Structures are given as C-alpha cells and as structure tokens.
Amino acid sequence: MIERLTDLVEDFAESAERARDELEPVPRVQQIGKIVSVGDAVAHVEGLRNVAADEIIELPGRLMGIASSVREEELGLILLGDAGDLSVGAPARRTGRVVDVPVGEAFLGRVVDALGRPLDGEPPPRVRGRHPIERSAPAIMDRAPVATPLQTGIKSVDSAIPIGRGQRELILGDRQTGKTTIALEAILNQHDTGVVSIYCAIGQRASAVARVVDTLRRHGALERTVVVVASGEDAPGLQFIAPYAATTIAEHFMHRGQDALIVYDDLTRHARAYRELSLLLRRPPGREAFPGDIFFIHARLLERATHLADERGGGSLTALPIIETQAQNVSAYIPTNLISITDGQIYVSPELFRAGMIPAIDIGNSVSRVGGDAQLPAYRAVVGDLKLAYAQFEELEAFSRFGSRLDEDTRQQLERGRRVREVLKQDEHDLVPVIEQIAVLFAATTGLLDQVDVSDIGKAEAVIRRRARDELDGLAKRVAEGARIDDDAREALTNTAKAALESHDLI
Ligand SMILES: Nc1ncnc2c1ncn2[C@@H]1O[C@H](COP(=O)(O)OP(=O)(O)OP(=O)(O)O)[C@@H](O)[C@H]1O
Image (cartoon, rainbow, N blue to C red; front, side, top):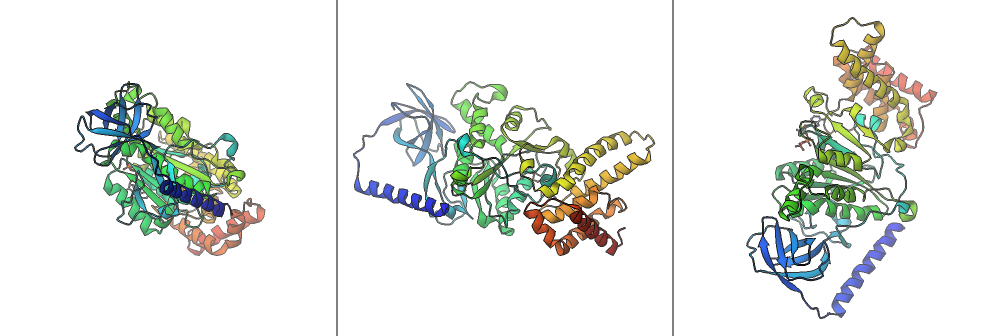
C-alpha cells in the first residue's frame, strides 16, 4: 500500500515537473563568472554572486563543479571530472541546483558512477525521480529502535557481534584481511530476506571492483544490488560524492518501506580524497593533515542509516562502512572518528588471518552496541558460553605457552576453546543458515565436540549441518519466528549432533 502510494506521489511529482518545464519556459538571467585558477581536482572562480553552498557550477566541456568554498570574492569548486582542457579565463555558469542523482528500482542489477550514469554498457536506468545527494538524516521522532536481525551468514558475526536492520557497524582492519569479503557475505546472505543492497566502491582499483561485481553476479545477488563506483582513477570530487549519492539511491528503498543494506568500501579512501580536495582548496590542515570537518562529513553520512518508525513506512537502512587501518593502529584519526560514530565494530586482525583463523574476526575486540536487542532469541542459548569460552581460552592459551603443567579443568577448557575456534572458521561464500549455525555452535559450546579430534572438526561441522538441515526443519521455523531454545529444543539439538557424529564414527 505504502509502496503504491509512494509510486503515485513520485509519478505525480515527475509529471508535474515535466509539465512545468514544458509550459513555462521561464526567461532566466544567467550569472556567468570566470575561472581564475585551475588545479588537478579543483578550480577557483570569480564574479559569481550569492552562490549557495554545494551549488553546481557549469564549466566548459560539460564539466561540473560543486561550490565548496564559498567566499565573497572567490569560489572554490570541487571538480566532478577531469580538469582536462579547462583554462583560466573560461566561463563558469551558475545553475541554482545542487548535485542530485536519479533513483528507482531500475537501479537494481546495475553498475553506475557517482552521478548515477551507467558503467555497465547498458542504457540509463528508467528512473522514478531525482534526489539531492546531500539530505538531512531522519529526525529522532521518525526513527524506531533496531529490532530485526540482519543475518550475515557468518557464524562469528551472527552469534557474537549481531547486526540489526538500521544499525551502523564498522568493519575495520589492516589491508588484505578479508574486510570486503565480510561485507560481501552480508550482501550474498540476503537472497531470501527481501533486503536490497548497495555496494559503494570508493577509490579502489577497477580490477577489485570488477571482482566484486563478478562475485555478486555468480551468486545471483547482482539483481538485488546496486553497485556505485568511483574508482581510484576517477576525479577525487567523484570519489568524495560517491557515498552520498549511493546513500540517496539506498534511501529510495528505505522510504518505500523496504530494508536496504549499504556497504561503503572504503571510507579511508573517501577521507583521503576529501583531504586532497581540502588542501587544494587551501583549507587549514588539522590532525594528520585532514581538514577540521572530516568528522562531520562521515557523521552526516552515517546518520542517514536508520530504522524508520512505522508511521514513516518502517523501512531501514543498515550501513557497513569499511576502514583500512595501518599496522593495526585503531587509534589513528579516521578509525577513532568512525568508531565513535557507529554502533559497533567488527575488527579483523592480520595475525588471525596469517594463523589461518579465517574470517579473521577478533571477537574480543569487536562489539555490536545495538544488534543484541535484535538478535534471534535462540542465539542466547549458545552465545553466552561462546564468548566466555573463547575469551577464557585465548587467555589460557597465552599462559599455557609458558609450559606450566596444567590441571584437568584448564586442559579441558583449552581443548574446548580449540574446538570452538575451529568451528568459527568459515570458507569464503560458505554462508551458514541460522539453524545450522545454532546446531554447530550448540554442539561446540556444550562439549559434544570435546571427544572429536581437532583435525576432524571441519568434518564434524559438515555432518552436523547436514543433519540439522534435514531433520530440524520444524525447529528452524520456530527459531526464525523468535522461539527460544527450550528443553525440547536442547534435546533435539543434542540428539541431532550426536547421531551425526556417531554415524560418521567421529565420537
Ligand atoms: N573466509 C575466507 N576464506 C578464504 N579466503 C578468504 C576469506 N575471506 C577472505 N579471503 C581471501 O582473503 C583475501 C583478502 O580478502 P578481502 O579482499 O576481502 O580483504 P580486504 O581486507 O578487503 O582487502 P583490501 O585491503 O584489498 O581492501 C582475498 O583473496 C579473499 O579471497
């Protein structure tokens, strides 16, 4: 109903706009200034009056600039393209418009640039209207608490660092530690949830973006995903506006009452593009040479991700911003800013990655501040023990390296911890449905795997998952509807795991 209404309103707005353009050719007085300096990514203009912040200024060669530094005597423009043959003295024309992007369902399955122009060789998507890339975040009164889980299919995330729809969860870690893969898994896992995804690539190599698009296509996820790309070869201006444009495209779905997921890959490069622009615009550099408003540019972006109240349609936008740290320095400027803006972080550690603990999620250093409220209640049966067993295990393991003799209790904790660690490993794109996660984690945390050899845990997991899939259909449905794990369910989980292990001679 709400979708139909939104469609009607949008169609009406579109035709009203067209009619106005056709019927009233308003005689317009054009204000034209001239370029006084041109840099690689910015230009300065003189002679334009009353320009609004963020207004688009048209330059020769269909190039656009955003009025970023607006001063009485001179304008600093962020160029949305290659400065090319732009020369001093060339005209600069006011447009009275701000940057906007087309939005609509036709964007699903498409790869577009930061201005919504196709990059996949197909014709431009049929749009439902255009919206400015900078929009204010929904008011507090229009928001509702995060209450529905967003399953990622990754065991360690869904159990220990759960994400809810409308949450902002940062993924941070050094380079090549599997950050993009975690975000991609979250997108791939939405195959039957109705959640649409937006993947925004900022400052990446074109080959890396092509790999992501290929993965989405191979897994049948591209048709429910919009890919917005401003690659490293694009103008810094385009890299700067890409996440705002992608968010506007995502908001279209949220305002229609749908659930959307947006991945910003990554905001370190976004911050660097903005630093480059700010320095060229002669703004005073602050900490790490970033300009003073670097916190604000990320806060105003991520504030737009939320869960709307029912009166506003009940849609949601979940944000997974990615940040690359250097030498695991999470207290650098950009990571600390983003940690404070988001509702938690998934920290991936290069040491775990090197040790083959993949996904390399450091559970002890990761947190989800609001997702716990949205987590399916059935997880409570496993998650408390999981976190505790794992934290104790990590501590004990460090101690036991000193070779001190271990008492039986400690030895047992270590053995169980090793098995839990094996269970938390997961192959790329091997997404685990909820009931299978619960069956395997339940077996590991209740000691059913204690007798299984550590080298056989992968096999044990596979047989438990298969049996849970075949035999626990009824429980799976109840769990999805929010049922807790009661005594009957415990018994069913225990019997399933035992039968699976016995039938393969694993215990
Ligand atoms: N669960 C996994 N199992 C096996 N391999 C994985 C897994 N997760 C990631 N990888 C591999 O690790 C490598 C790095 O992954 P990814 O590109 O996701 O990392 P990243 O931290 O986003 O890297 P970058 O620093 O380039 O952004 C890739 O080759 C990927 O295939």
